[in-house]
Structure formats: structure tokens, C-alpha cells
Length: 98
Length: 136
Length: 119
Image 1 (tube, rainbow over the protein chains, first blue to last red):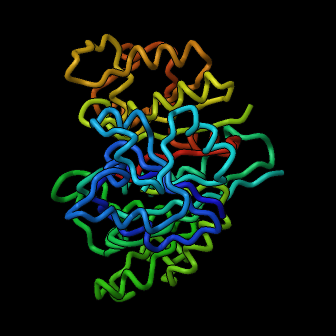
Image 2: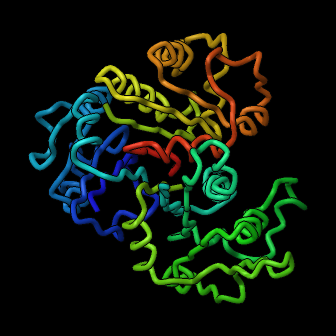
């Protein structure tokens, strides 16, 4: 399955993402999830960024938190709401908000 | 004639938030969805418990006695009575030391259907075969 | 045109998830898609009318009204809403009231479903 997973927390309270298998897995960082894209803890990037090759962060939520595009990990594609709508309809068959 | 298969995945414990319980009640709603669909169209949910969500399946919940609210146990009994497929993750039950005899059943209400204890892999397959997945 | 159904369970005030859902819905409908919104649990309080938009808090009414005008179907879980002391005369006009099967029926005809219940 092609699964787009929304991550909206910086500290995940469930381990579901570690267990899901998908032929194509996208991780879409929104709300406090965008901290994964930008914040390094003790100099290390978020381990969440290792979980997929398809990583996205919502620009409006980065900006809201004072995070700039230049601070975003190079593996993460910054998208806006319009891009997100296209992603939902064109790239993933199923969506999960964990 | 079209059927839409859905996977309801409850991954959090009940009672702190209302949402995990709503996962059960939304799945049960499949029983009456026909009134809003065209003839021959159906919705078929599978209700799955994983992670901390498996704790909803414990017997002898006393939510009604203590807080005057319906327990997840009562809703699960209803789910079994309306013939819903209810799956609980074997690995997570084992992690918590919960044996099958501690799991809710609806025998007292005459239901033949039982909660199925299955490996996570089976629940993964439910998600793959569903048209949409709904996490609670 | 494709159909997106969004299910939201988070409160309007105290969480920004409903803000996210409303913005996503607005963007999708502006791009020509059909959008349905199901409100359940704490999200149902968002359909209360006469909301005062104090800038410290999220607001829903003006966004719901704009979405309804654009043809978005918005439905609140009747039981969840009544349990919060909100009756039909207290609600934004145009919001539908129904039971959980409304959501399942909309899902049945949707291309994509974003169910925001995992919080």
C-alpha cells in the first residue's frame, strides 16, 4: 500500500509508525511534528527522519514555530497546503494520522 | 454492488481520552450505514487493537459503576453481537502478560463471535486490504 | 475533482488540529475538490454559533461558514454535541446533525479519508 502518515507531535506517544509496513511510506510532518524536520537534539537529527525516504514538512507550521526553511534537514521537502492536497490525491492511497 | 472495507485501529488506552472509545462506536455504526447508501452497497469494518490500545479488551471494567459512563467492555460486547470482526494483537497482549481468558467476550449475551487474538502481521494485512485506515 | 473526507475529533480551543483540518479543507475545495467534514468528540463544540474571536484562541465559526458557502458538507455527531450542552438552535446554520453512520457513508464514496482521531 501507499501510505501517507501524518506526524503531529514532537514526542510520539505510540510506536505504530515503527511497525507499519508500506510499499511506499510517506511521513508528513505537521503541527509540532515539524520539529522533527528542524531541531537537532544533542546535535543529532530526529531518528524519525531515518524511517522513510519520503519526508515532507508543512511550511505554514514551520513558520508558525519560528523555523526557517534553511534549518530544515535536506532530506525533508517543505510543502504548503496546496502541495499537501496534491500529495494526498496523487501520491498516497491511504492516510494515517497517528 | 460495492463494499468499502475499513480498518479501525485503536492504538491508545481508553478513558483518558474519549477517542479510543469512539473508535469502537464508529466501527459499530456500520450496522446502520445502509440507510444512507444505495441498494447493495455496504461498508465492512474490521476493528483492531494494537499497542496500548489492547488494554481496552480487558474484562470486568467498572466504568458505569464508578463514573456512570459506558465501558469499552460494553461496547466491545455490542461489537461482537453485531458480528463485527474484532482483532487484538497477540504480541502486545503477551507484552502486557494478558492471557486470552482475561479478554472480553459476549457469551453472556448470546454472541458466538469472539475477539480474535492474532499476530500483528494479520492486522497489517487488514490495513493493506482496507480502502481506508482510521487510527484512534 | 476528487472527494476528501476529513474526520476530526479534537477540540477547537485547546488544540490546533481543527485549525489544520479547516485550512486543509479550504485549500482542497479551492482546488476544485469535494470535501466532507465529520466532527466527533470534542470537535463538536466547534459548531457553536456566536463565537467570539479572541486572538488568544482558535476560532471556527467564520471558517465553517466560509466552507459551507463553498459547498463543503459539515456534519456534527448529534450525541457528542448534545452531551456538551449544545442544541440545534445554538449551532451554525447549515451544519448537519447526524450519527456516526453519516461518516461511514461519506467515507464509502470518498477517494481519500484523513481521519484525525489518534490524539
